[in-house]
Image 1 (cartoon, helix red, strand yellow):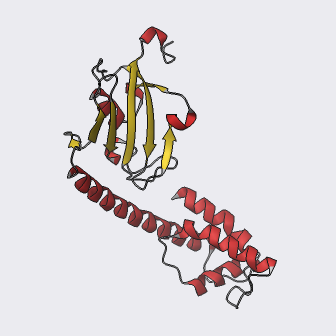
Image 2 (tube, one colour):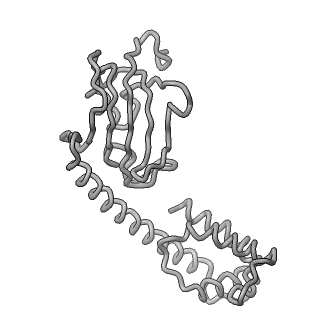
Length: 230
């Protein structure tokens, strides 16, 4: 919410340079009109979920830019914006939680998908016969992490090199999941947000997001050879 509020406050003065005449018919062949439209289009996604009266929005925009008498004090305006953003965030989070529950219910019914007591789901793509790691092991893996919509947010494959991972320094879903594997295995994990980044999210990962990881367990790393050892 804080990021959205900052974005809103930073962009508002820029948009206001083009606020006059915004309700009139526009000709997008004109540079000023195209720029104005582009600014609105870029800002729009950050305001999704808010219920806006566009006429009132433009009036407030013009009042802020032209420094005319405002119908609200600055404190009143900021308080209203914060309340609106909070409500929008709560609504998005509620929708994300519902989508997450639906996803895991449907996914659990797919052939080959297993569910642990924690709610972690996984399927075996290749079963190895090597050593199994412990919760404090350091392992070398290849992996790809994505959201349920297919957006890839991290991939050792894309970087062209495997990763050395200490299992006591990663999200709980990884710590639990990797321990199910034997060296030489390849699994796909479906990690609930409660075993990942929860209501906060992280970077490109929204709050209450299930994560999908395809992981190859390549080897156990000897502690004396680990880059994480002093």
